[in-house]
Image (cartoon, rainbow, N blue to C red; front, side):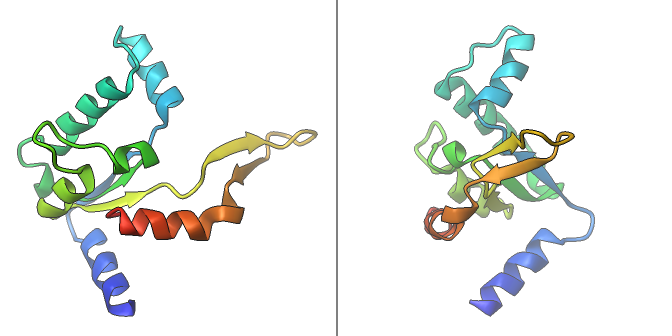
Length: 131
């Protein structure tokens, strides 16, 4: 396990490459789609992510991609799961660990993440799913 973690960390930290955050949930990405007149459906989100992950040469610039849980189980047009597609291109798939961020009432905008209590269970599921 330690060797796998060190190997993953080395891949993510590849000099000259960066990490892309594709972890917008349906509501966040929906706001961006609405602004340009694109329907916010799971299929549209899948097509958008496929476009990003299959762009020619993206593996020359990306070492890792942070995914939304929805993306972990989506597939390309040819039926390949996105984490597998990314891995084949040398891009480490990861996943955002929290469920939702809430503003704490009575604070000056302080926030708390929902889902820390079930993080261990979700991390195991995500790891088994390819992230």
